[in-house]
Amino acid sequence: MNTAFYIARRYLFAKKSTNAINIISAISVVGVFVGSAALIIILSAFNGLEDLVLKMFNTMTPQLVIMPVKGKTFEPNTVYFNQLKKAEGIYSYVEVLSENALLRYNDKQSVGLIKGVSPDYLKNKSLDSTIIDGHFILDNPSGHFAVIGSAIQNFLMVNTTDPFLPLQVYSPKKGRSTSSLNPGDDFTVLSIPVSGVFEVQQDFDNVAVVPLAFARKLLEEPQKVSSIEILLNKGVNADKFKSSVEKEIGEGFLVKDRIEQNTALHNILGSEKWAVYIILTFVLIIAIFNIIGSLTMLVIDKLKDIAVLSSLGAGKSLIKRIFLLEGMMITMTGCILGLIAGLVFCLLQQEFGFVKMAQDNPILTNGYPIGLKWMDFLLVFLTVTVFSFMASALSSNLSVKKIDHLNQDL
Image (cartoon, rainbow, N blue to C red):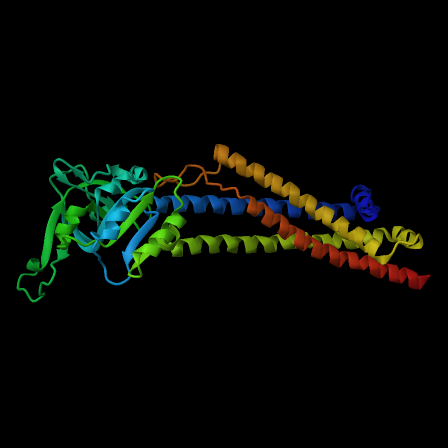
């Protein structure tokens, strides 16, 4: 067995002449334990929250979206797009025509985004989970219907159960002069009943989803579309499919995956997690550096042992290594116990959800979400290892200085 490790282990469990050393060592272990557990729990909570937020966005965000580099619309009935529509691996191919419009209901009005979608849009089964009132219906034998976001519903106070009071939609007519004596002549005005209200997130809740045919009539656009949204079959690699589309579609179009569609969201989620990690790491460093006081007192307590080891031929490096390993053992014990405690807490939270969160959204789960990633455990372990080594190395240098003093006295 390694001599330095053997002696360091004996010192770890041996009774010290001064009880304060044991107390300070215990405080160091507890501090690292609490810091490690808190860090892994917080990181896992951010993982769970990130997964939940992305799940909310992904209900309305397609895996791929194709849009023009210039202009608002493009012609979808080309040879390439007709072939892409039949490509293997595509689950839903949705043609979208969207534009801002004025929405009016009773005596209230608001500006919202009209999003006209082709029938494949309803293949997305997760849409029903976003409904908080009514149903996600866009067409039936009686005609067209709109499904509006909760922000529009809250402002206009739309009653989805009243079929005799539809939503009125105003859109400027193309090529129409604004100098008309009657401003109403400059707008296309259509009415559409509301079948349901959905709620996802602020960016989506100001949208009114309508059939593509209704949007074409409202916007006076018989052929072109604003974008094409694609969902892929399970097992199809979205990145590879995106790359193949980009190679063939040409430079006139942008192909965006979910991350590119919500770049700001992903950046915010990532920066918040790292900010919390940095803050808690500073707290953990304070707990780790308590080991300096503990080892300093231990070196003073073991001066006789150091003198004996030195007289037996132990070099400075061996004695320094003993106290370095002693400090590492103290901090790493707290780290490992903290990681285990954090893992147990996270597993219990996943299973029983005893820490609750507000359930104002039907997509949200009742228990606070937790996402376990082995990289987080490795990150915390390496963080504690690095800083505990630094603290232990500073303290172990004292033992070398004590050897020099002993040699001078002799």
